[in-house]
Length: 143
Image (tube, rainbow, N blue to C red; front, side, top):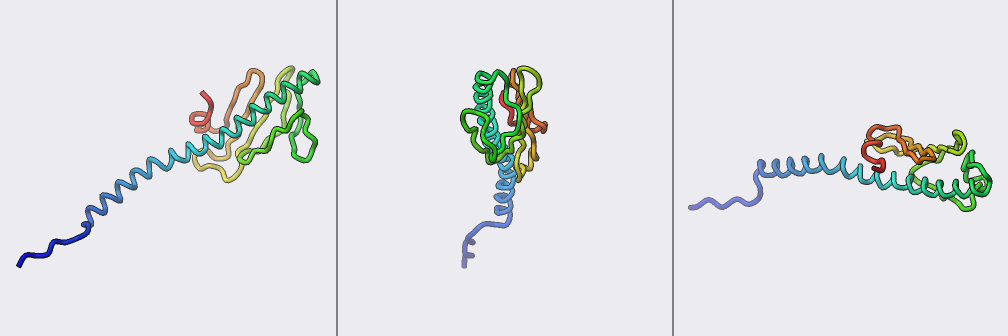
């Protein structure tokens, strides 16, 4: 009498499949978090673009750059609203001489594990962007 053929997978085959899936996950998950954070970082860069335009219009109208807090409770100093950011908190705009200004944007909680709660700085002119985290500087900053 012939033995019945067995059905299913052996333990070794299952372990190999689990090992392959684990290796793929170890490579893909950190890359996924970097891509997601790039999207969130893009929010801050879009807001900075709006702030640059608003500052230039303020300079043309008043002869100086605006310096102060951009709180939601106070009336906006600019001719249009800059909008609210979901992933970053806006610091006050500081003038650093004439004519130049700087603003800091801090990443809100929950902070990404790879980068932590980093702070993005924008100084104008000439328009330099900085970041407090080395990983942020390497992965997220515009080239």
